[in-house]
Structures are given as structure tokens and as C-alpha cells.
Amino acid sequence: MDRYASVMIGRTSPLELSVENRIVGSMVAGAVGDALGWPQEMRPTNSNTRTSRSVPTGTGFREWQRRTGGRFYNRVERVQAGEYSDDTQLTLCTARSLIRSSLWWIDFTHSELPAWTVYQRGAGRSTLRAANAWLSGTAPWSLASPKDKEEYWQAGGNGAAMRIHPHSLAWMESNEFMPLGIELATNALTTHGHPRAIIGAIVHGFVVWRAVQKQGTLAYGEPVTWALEGLELLTEMPSVESTWPDWQFVLKSTRPGYESLWASVREEMLVLLKLCQDGVRQGALAVDSDVLRRLGCFDRGTGGAGTVSAAAAVFLASRFAPEPLHGLREAAFAIGADTDTIASMTGSILGAIHGRDHLDGFVDGLQDLDYLTDIARRLADPERQDKASHEPRPSVTKSALVKTRDSLKSRLEEQPVALPDRRGGMVIEILRTTGQPGTTSSTSWRIKTDDGQTIYITSVQRDAKESGKPDNAAADIGHRGTARVGVKLAVVEPARMAKFFHDVFGLATKEASTHVNIGGVLALVAKEFDGQPSLVPDAQEPLIFIETDAIERIFNLVLSSDGRIIQGMDRRENRRFFICEDPGGNRVEVIEKRST
Image (cartoon, rainbow, N blue to C red; front, top):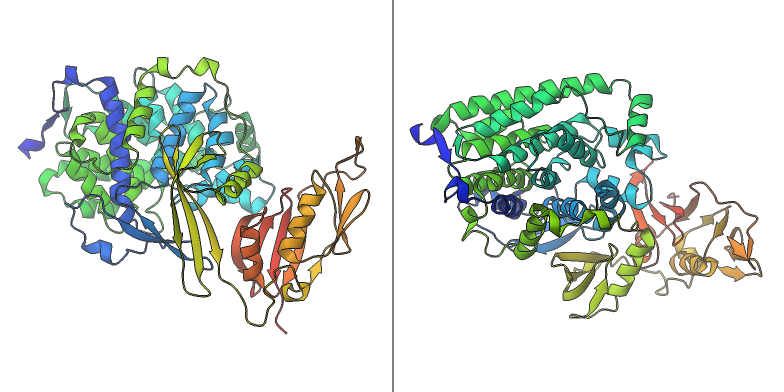
């Protein structure tokens, strides 16, 4: 165990390891871990579940295929060697908001998260659900549905911890942790309400903060000691009154057991860190997979928890501090665990300790290496941020996403595109996949943003043509079943919405002087007519009911229209259904006709 007794930081003298080097190292090593671990991620969407078990730990980046799209729109996506997942995407979202505005949490929730929904890769359910809530203009803890609100408060996964470390890097010169702790909590709760997510994120952020500040010799196992120090400070949830007063109000008024739940999870985290400490003390005798197993990393019920991932990352960073690249590989090939997230979090710690130089020769082929480096350097240099003169960007809206998707349909390679977060971009490549009849096909636009990030925006189609049905989607309402509607809506663009209902559902439309009639029973009335406000008040969360015997075809038509799917195909009372939005943001539930 002698060679593990202490670790000299970096390849150079500690005095030569600059702040910028450490910050760049943390950002880049996190992305390296993500790209290494993503092919092994043991989730149902991974098509390499079997073959990835035989991959040796010395293997670097590789091209692979992943399954995505769920049960009804399942497709295979090719992921190029070195490409990263939602872990790094959301880390960059956090970093951009910090660089852009002193009101970073507004920028993050109103611009970054909503825009991310159109280009996300491998998103977790809780994070995506919360991002869609922000896209609709509602905080996830204020959603109308009790079920949706409860899902937010039960969200305890690692989606917050995996994106959190840019805060720690930006605060590296501070000697006081609690202002940073409030920032970490402010970020985490934008998507996750359970203490497992928030405590996991804060503990991980504390470890990265201590790592980027460390000078001199690193004691073996010191990152675990840092984690224990950070946990000691978390006797209660940090107050976010200054950033999210509405969250604080909802917490106090509707979650009476939250304080005791916080204390329980804190004790849970302490047990995990004690397991890490025991594993580190065994030194070379430790079997890393056994420690990870005791932490719960391979348990499908707990492996993705924020607390478990934070503990796993700090254990591996402690265990392999003398050999950081070995540590990244061990995390990335911990088959059965959430490998991309654990490897990314491990990398963010090791990179903060050892800096960028220890990655030389290991980053070739990493997606957006130059962009990651530039973002990290801007985090390291407050003069390059100029937060005071930058207000948060305007909110990203659903119509902005629709506009971007629509514009891509006419774009060719090497043509520009405007993105919903107000960045520009260039279409670099158009990738098309075509399956067998009755399966899905997709078009993906590979885009290089004007600030240097690579993103993919994908449109999925299903060949759901049914025998004996008309080819013209709007030719015959009979092949769609019956429409039962009885709603009068005040809208901004009646004609555009009428076209949606005609083209997608085949409903007859008739234009009158003051409104457009749909199917004989739905009247779309302009919110303003001849300069006067409409007499019809705005409906509160209207739901239009459509029953059809061709639900897959309808789903496909919605995808190619101005509408938007907000809840994918599901089953209720033995009937398939989905919920979409029309161009005006009104909800439409489409349900399969009962069999006779």
C-alpha cells in the first residue's frame, strides 16, 4: 500500500498547475468519462448490453449503436466514437448560464433547459420531464397535475449531480462554501425535488470545489474525507429563498415531512461514504466491484440515485488518484452501473486534481474538445464572462422549437440554421435511417453551433400505412374514427390551427366572419377581432378528445405537423393513447377506438 500513501498533484510542480489548467482538466475529464462510459450504460435503451460486457477496460472511445424511441417508435441510433451524452450536454448548459448572466438560474430554466429538449441525447426521465415543464412556462413543483408534482418531489436520480460541477469551478477562489452550497441546491432542484438528488449534487460539488483548490500532496483517500466534510455541513436543506422563493413556499406549505426525509437521506449518504472509506483503507487489497456493489451501483432500483453516484465517484477518484486514467476506465466499464454518469463525475474530480495535462494522448476524438476547453477557460476568467451586462436570454418557447424543426426540413448540408436558444449553427451532415415497412425511420441533422458545440436534432417518422386505408391523410375522416369535441377556444391564429386539425385529423373546417368551425362543433375564435378583444375568455388547460382507429398514423401525422407530442404512446384500459399539443399550445388527447 506504500505507493498509495500520498499522491503528488499533476505532472508538474503544484505551483505550476494553474487554476485554468485544473478547471479545463475537470471539464474535459468529465466529458471523457461520459464518452467512455456511455456505450456501457446499462439502461433499456442500450443496444450493446451483451457485447459491452466483454469490452476490456483498456479500450478507448468506440463507435456503437443505441436503441431509443420507446416501444412504439423504437429505432437504432449510431453514436460516433468520442461523442458524449446528456451528462456533458447539461454540464455545458450549466456553464453557459453561469458565464452568461448573474441571474444564471433564470437563464438555465428559461433558455438552456427548454432548448436542450430539442437536441438532448440519452436524457433521463426526471430531467426531461422537468425541462418540458419549464418549456411550457411552469416550474415542475407548480404543475397542475398532482401526479406530475409528486413525480417531481420523488425524483432522486443523479441528473442533478452529473451537471453540477461548473458551479464548483466558478467558485474555486472562495474560502466559504455555503454561498456555493446555495447555488448547488438552486440548480439541483430545478429538475429534482428529492433529497437524494440534492444531497448527492451538493456533496459532489463540495468534493470538486476542494479538489480544484488543493495544492501540494494529496493524501490517499482524501476525496472521501472531503465528501464527509461536505456532508457534515448539510444538517438541513440550504435556503433558496433568494433564488426560488416559490419553491421554498411550496416546500413549507405542502411537504411537512421534508425535514425528516432530508435527515434520513443524510444518514443514508453517511453510510455510503463510510463504505467508501472502508474500501479506500483496504488499498490494493480492495476489490472495486465489490465496493461498488455494496454502494448499490448495480442495483436497478438504487444505482441511478444521486447519493449512490456521488459516493461511487468519490470512491473511484480516491482509489485511483495516483492513476487517473485508470480510474476513468474503471468507472466507464463498471458494467451494470450508470457508467456514463459515474465516469463523468469521477472525471470531474480527477481532472480538478490533476489538471488538463494528465489527459494528453487520451482526448483524441473527443466530441467538442476545443469548445469544452473554451467554456472552461471562460469559467476560469471572470473578465471573459461580463455577467453584469448580460440579462438572462428571453425564454425559449414551444413555437421556437417548432420553427427550428420546420426550418431544418428545407436545409441542406453547409446551410445555416437558427436555434431556439438564439445561437446560430451550420448543418454539417444529414443522417437518414430507413427501416422495414411498418417500422420507424428518422432524419438527424448534425449541427455545429456558431460557438462551437456539436448537436443533433432528430425527426422520427413511422411507416404506419394500414392496408385498406386511403393514402391521402385528409381524404376521409372515417379512417380516423370519430371526433367528440365540444370546446370553444380563443386563439391567436385560427386559420393556422384549423389547418392543423384538417391536415392531421381530417376534420372538416368552415371559415366564418368571426371564427373557424372545426368538425361542426369546435369553434376557434380570434382573441382579437377588428381591434377588439374576443368575448371568449382563455380556457384553462383545455383538453380536446379525439377517438380514432388509426392511432399510429395520427401519431405520425402529428410529428410532421405544427403540433407537438407531450406524452408518448401509452396504454389505458387496454387502449393506446397519447397527448399532443396543437400549434396554440392546447392539449389534445388521442385515444384508440374501442374494439367491437
